[in-house]
Structure formats: structure tokens, C-alpha cells
Image (cartoon, rainbow, N blue to C red; front, side, top):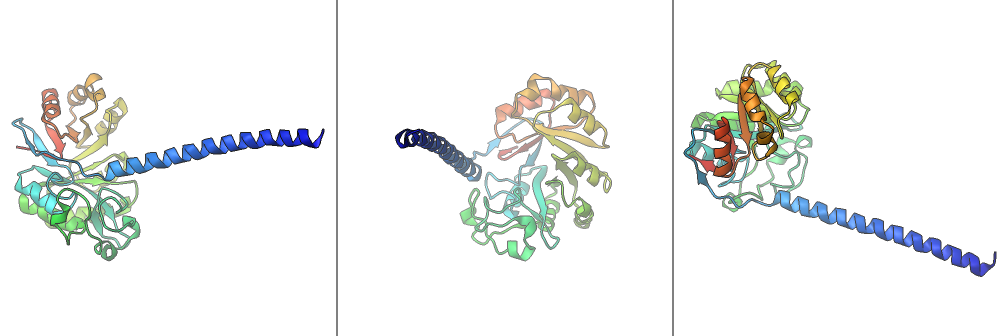
Length: 287
């Protein structure tokens, strides 16, 4: 083979390599752009309108009344109490030094002015952060995390049920600390989780109501809920599949308590009420 022919051969290989690398680079750029867009969407504060309903339903303020104050903060829970919600829902994690605090995310990036993993930080470290996102956050310049203790005190003061979401599958060996705090503050507690094993762990410690969270109700979800005393199902009330497949009716026929989340428009609430759902978690609907 002549040097010219060999050079031509390598030239074709290089062209193929360049094309492949260009395609891979383009895909990486698209993935990064999509990731940034998704992150920006997740971090964006919704533009809420506070609505009212006349339906005979029980309303739970999702992460507190996050339509008027930053989610999962003391002001959001206080606003829920002032607006007469039956309960205020929160999400909890355990810090590195054993303090239960309220946060929806395992990382502080979305809501706070600094970035840190909640469970890898001490309580003191986290309390140095300030809320930098959420509705009207600028009205609370010194606002930081709400501890589980502060949340329970607010719920007790306003006569609200403490609806506590158990996040992840870890720290279950410390659930007795949660129970002790609930009893200390004399709060009425309800426990919810997407992880059924969490509900089993908490059931071994208390007979308080628990709800298995699910996006779309399945027959397996129903059987799991039926296997645990005083356990209901709390489903995504915005998914049409739950209506179309008759799963709401099936839960009720089986004797399960049912709730729906996160309902932010009165048309969907009316539709759920017509199905017999009376426990509604919402960001912005009041009575």
C-alpha cells in the first residue's frame, strides 16, 4: 500500500472519529442544558393564587401554607394555623448530630443561601444558612430552618394535626426520637411515606394514623395498606389514571382511608370530592 493510500485511509478514520466525538459532545451539551433547565424549573417559585372551596373536605397545608410564605418554615406553618387548616404537612431529615429538622430536599441548594447535604451537616451549621427562595422570602431576611420541635409547637398552638413525611429509607432506628417529641408537645400526629418499610417501622412505635404515598394506586399498594393497622393511601390526585381505572373507588370499597395530593385548583378538588375523597393536601386552597 502506498503512503498516499494509507494517509487517505487514516483520514477517513479520523473523519469518523471526529463525527462520533462531535455527536457525543452534542449529546452531552443537550443533557447538560436539559439538566440546567430541569433544575431551574424545580427551583422556581410557583405563582400561587389563594383559592377557596365550599366542599366538605379536610385540608392539609402542603409544606405549610407555601402559597404565602417559604415552604417548610415556621412562618408557613403559622400561616396554615391562621388560615384554619386541619393539618400542616412537613418533611423531615436527621442532622449529623441527631437533630430532626424540616426540609423537603436532602440538599439545601434549592431553598437556602448555601449548599450542603442536610444529613451530613450539624444543626448549628445548617442554622447559619438563610432562606433564599419561596413566596415572600424577602420578607423574612433572618429566616432559617425550622426544627421538628418548633414545627410541633406551632401545630399544638394552632390545634393542627402534624402530618409528618418520613423521607428516604434511613434513620429508621431513630424513629423513637420522633415519637418522643410528638408526645412531649402533645401533638396529634399523622405519618406519611412513599416507603412502606418506613410506615412499618413507625407502626411498631405508635398507633397513630399512617398513609402510604403513591403516584398511581395499584392493587399491590392496596394490599400493602390493608396489611398494616390504621393505614390509608394518599395518592397523586392530578393523575387521570387514578380516576380512569376506578382505583379510588376500590380503595374506599376496601375500607381504606384515602387522601389526595397536591391539589391546587378547585375543579380537581371538586372531582375528587365527587369520588368520595375528603382528605386533601394543597398549597393554596382554603375554606
